[in-house]
Image (cartoon, rainbow over all chains, first blue to last red; front, side, top):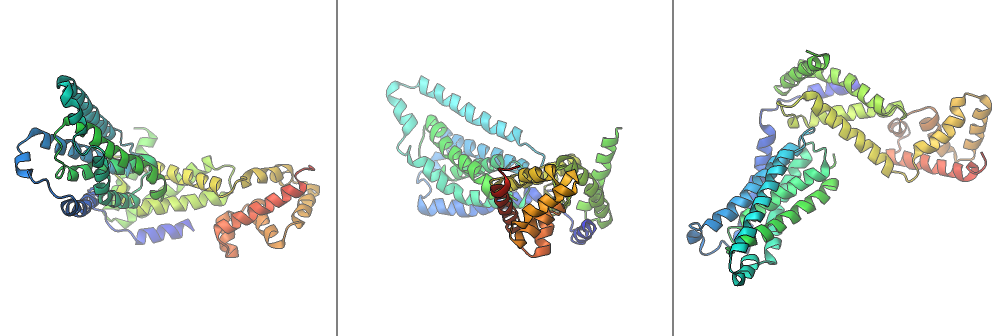
Length: 212
Length: 185
């Protein structure tokens, strides 16, 4: 019986080019981007002062923080889609990014005059921000789950969390082209909260969606 | 170089050739992996019907084939193969836990230890008498799975029932037996 199976599998053998898995993941990201970016542009709109904003540090900090977390998340997705890999290093990188930003925000708040603090932390869109991030992460989430289902994750909750981290951070990166908030503490709190929520949903969904 | 390292190097070379499309290497690789996997599952499923080991070996070979894109050439091949095998093993144990509230194997031990393995004809008669209390179809299924040692998959294939239907029927049969005879000894 097993000999028959081996014969069938050998007949079915097609070459696998080097880097095939990474290319598949890249395709998933581009698919997510192709839906998420237009969704943001039509639904929320690019910030009107985008040209001037690109001359400010906080615009690039927001963009860099979310892109950095997104890349760490994608690295974790790639690692955890392979049996026998633990994905510890990318998750450590993500944790370091979050911690560093949190510490800088606390310093920033401590140095600021007391009356400026509420605005640095809450801005004008505090409660909405995580929900917009979650909504814009849906296309990335769907594409990354589809990628993961065709791969071979062996730690399903962790693999799902990595999918959520990548999708949440990429959704936040797209959102940063709309968001006009200028406080570092705002970024550290509300952006991180939105991304963490998607990661938590991914961890829960992974147990069910990623079985193979 | 140790024996394990030699095997790893040999299998990894075969895998890299297979990924490049070399059918002869792939056949040798799968044949060697079959032995490796059989030993791996046998050590861990010594108290399960032998059919389950074969099922798992084949399922793992299929997974290796279908998901070979996830092999990282920088990684040890045996680590990759064993990670897949362990996932399939855990998945089987989880599924068999979920599919029945009362584990079939525990009840089977109750009968198997006390009767079948004793090889006594008296016990064998007792068992037949107990089984006679069940509907004919259930009796046949229990006989095949728990006394002849066929796997659920084999029985399902032979009777045309689904695997879960076989498991449910066997489970209900055992529960009925326990309800009737469980209290006496």
